[in-house]
Amino acid sequence: MEQFSFIASMPDEPGALHRAAEIITRYKGNINRIQYDRRIDRNIVFFEVAAASEVYEKIREELERIGYLQTSLHPVAFLKFNVYLPNCPGALFDFLNHTTSSGANITFLDFDDRGHHPERLVVSLNIENTDLIDSLLNRLKSKYRLEIVEYDTTGEKLDDTVFYLRLAQKLRYYIGNAEDDFLMKFLHDINHIAQELSNLKKDPVEVFENILKVGETLRRTSGEGFYADVQRVRINKEIELFCFQLPCGGNIYLFDTPGEKVMIDAGYGIYQPDVVNMLQHYGLGDLSLLKRIYITHADADHCGAAGFFSAPSYLNRETLKITQETSRAYGSSNQGCILEEVYTKMINLFSRFTPPSNVILFPEISYQDKEIEKRGAFPVVSRFTIGDLEFEALQGLGGHMYGEIFYLCPEEGLLFPQDAVINFRSLSPERTEYNVLADYLMTSVNVDSSLAKEERNALLSLIQELDSELVKKGKKCLVCCGHGSISVLENGKLVEHSSSERYFARKAL
Image (tube, rainbow, N blue to C red; front, side, top):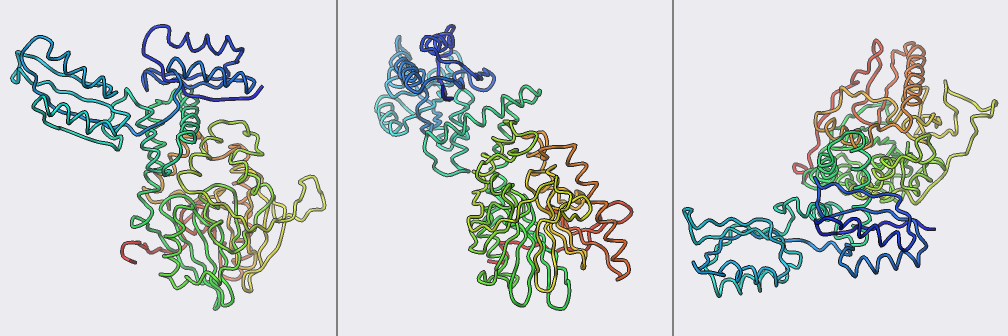
């Protein structure tokens, strides 16, 4: 038996859901998931059914025959107008003949012949077939005095009687003109998040609002709305390190050396054109000199733009697998979590996820190998140089994400611990607000919270150990966090290493 999902659009009447269940049962389909919430949409029901493929087709055919199967998500228009009816028997009935024949769904009527406007009927309509709007209005204008109050095709004015259609229209704005089949599958996934979080006592409407807020924030902060906070650190006479804090998501780090440029993490795909413009602004725009990209982990905000660059991306096999599986929980103790899986699909769509295609894999190692070299608690999987700096690639424990890699230059005290160690106090309010959305939609950004705590403590111990050696040179370990500022550890707390400047795309144009 295979797993199938579909959306049913059913009349708001007693027995409608029972009728759909009877059809599925009669064809020996097994309902694995069902979600209906009248508070959200009184007509829409989400089903997951296990059945043989030929049986599922019969279920679909019968549901479609009785008008229960949602097969498309055509844009729905909202139309509000005043119409002045003659004061005679049957006037309202005659008017309703016109709206019914146009396929319009009346969502609001207001008429009182003892009111201030005894002939005025206020009407609000939702119309799926927008091509019929002009013909409806022309018919009405030929017979009645008509005043258009509002007309909207964006979905903003639709009421909650068509909640999922309205949601679909907003999603199209953030992910492009997706085909109906794809969008319905995406709605099914989003609904699954809402179901899971509702079981955790979260308001389903707030869930949908936060999902849309992710898409809206990414779109608003790209293009002319793009900005970044930039730190520049002179490592030695020949090498400068740039830290680019993007509006949302992870940092991009870039080493500028005489012979090449090397990047650590690549940010969201949606920001890639803006990042290229920013690099040009700082004299780093010759991408032929970008020779290597080192990826820390598979989250979209760290590797989602790597595929836009021709330079090879260095990562391990586990990270590559996660980009292919599109579930950030893959390989972890939390592997089956639907929140992690659906969030990954959602953020990949919103952020235009384009993972690395030109890939060089680090050697595979085993934690059971007692001979493996370690730096603190972390196995050393590879070594490489950037200019005259010698780096180690350290395999993480998998607390934040399975397959994560940290990068360390012991001699200069440069540590890239990705999202395992973050100076949260250095995050701007806007970035904090955005990061909270992921926490809300997944309940935790770490796939294994207890392991993440162990990992962070091990990294802090490593930083202290490095500091004890670096103090002889008058230096401290620079902690190049996955989010926020480059920081140093002072009295057990992360403190910003240096000030940053803000880059604005608008000013750079």
